[in-house]
Length: 78
Image (cartoon, rainbow, N blue to C red; front, side):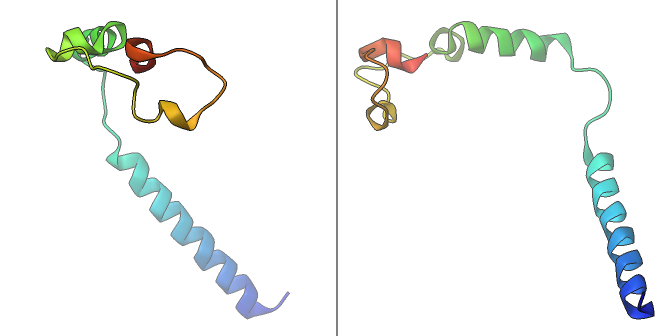
């Protein structure tokens, strides 16, 4: 194997480890607080109620891009 190619591969692997290791260090640590988990459940159950906003009228904006589901109106916002 060419020495330059071997050196290139070693440098590339080293750089990859450093970059991916940096992402791992940037991740949040510890447990998620219970209030955050509860808020996620509230949003999943009824995002309109949890956000304190009025129920949207009509179809969800992206609904017209699909053709396989026949729901309409407020059912398209779930």
